[in-house]
Image (cartoon, rainbow, N blue to C red; front, side, top):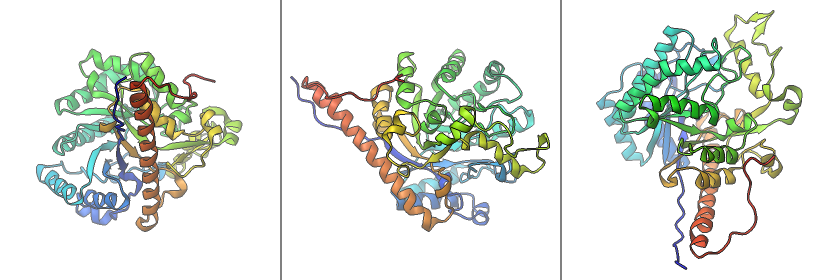
Length: 413
């Protein structure tokens, strides 16, 4: 038997900068729109992350959704009120060089199928600026949502995707970029009772959307930035999702990861089921939408009545919850990615996303050790998975030595 060397391949660690929105106070970053990225690059170095995923968003003065109506407000650390230029890119590159911290990609999460044409176009125009910035920074991908026109049914949204979103992907292709879709269903994005407000929420929709993209020559531009927290929210588990993609020949679709968990509250599920809280949330007053925008955040009770986001490493190690698909089994998540997906782990980003409400502290001194600990946990669990995979699938397999025991199985109920 041939002897194969032990060569584990860890993934590339990154962190989404929305974790600390006010690292650079608003007054300072509004006056100097690239200061926030510079300071986040230094902060990332301090907490042990070799890369950052830059959070981009419409400026608070330009957005259609007020911050008080958001469950997880996004940060406009990439300020694009003015177009990103070569000079701005040079400044960011200089900061990257001085800190030794890189960029995984840029993230802009918005609804590109919004029913209001003027609002929708504003979002699309902003994404074009994100594309331009990504190209100038030498990146190969951006991350975002597809969205949903909540006035239309799903098949109508599929048609709208072809009409509205495919042209965006053609613009990405012209700049050498891939668009990686994060699959959050966004149940609280509006005050209707609709649950799926981002149509790219699961493998079935991903495949349907990709077929549309292939028809228009932009199949290579459409990829998924997988986040296991959303799978847990919808009663799914990572291994079965990855197995389904492999079984159907679409395991190439996932090209990056958000590292964020979800801890399901069994009491909430008992009260409301997986449809979430459907009435008396507080987003409607006297049978009509509340005139107070701050009340609209209550639409998120469709989700938070059932579960709470986890920052990796902050939830109890609970094997029973893993088996019930009520929390993320991080080790098996990283193993399944290597065993079932068509990825090169050494060139795949693992982006920590912090949305654990009770630890979402907008204070640098307090948040730094929390993020540092979570990043260390993520790095360690991925390195453990890389070691197990290399040992079992490379070293032992090359010598014909069987692997012991049984692992988690896909589709098992």
